[in-house]
Length: 195
Ligand code: ADP
Ligand code: NI
Image (tube, rainbow, N blue to C red; front, side):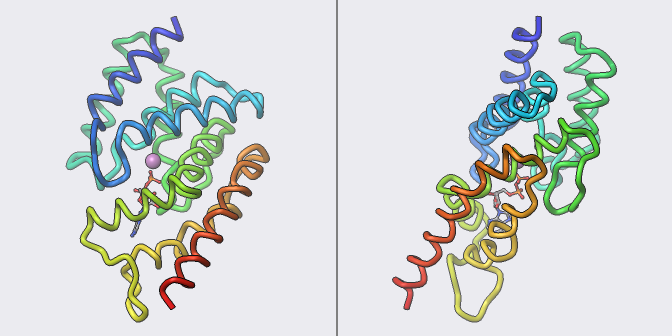
């Protein structure tokens, strides 16, 4: 039952996100879902809720959906149609609303904290760096400019380097360590070549 529901949720994410080129493609959802499940097992949280919310965590993002409320409403109907319980649906919705970095919220349930960590882990390390430049390119932003701050390199200082400190769970903190170090090494090399 749960496996079948997760496979329907995966197909739903595929339809919604497909090949978005701003760093929110289907594979971002897949990485976040897989990471959330892995952390849930280590932290003894509910792996089903974490994986499901991982697949769906960017539903209703204002950058991606012209009508965020409608997107959430459609998701609720979909989850009802595949027989999730009301309790599960309410929890998933609450998690999705709380995970975003820009809102600066810490979700109150462990499952929300785990999905937030998983989304943030995907923003650092080799993949996070690739996503940063993909986002920058899709938004006509320069790679770097010594005097301007609306650049992709600036985003490392505004967000990426801060994420390690913001991880909620110990499991995510451990995974973040290596990715953070790699991000720092990358930046060091970038400025060596620049200068
Ligand atoms: P999510 O909600 O999935 O964390 P965001 O919408 O905040 O994602 O960002 C998507 C990706 O684009 C992330 O990897 C993020 O670091 C990157 N990103 C967001 N804002 C910028 C920016 N101003 N410049 C470069 N990259 C950005
Ligand atoms: Ni995301």
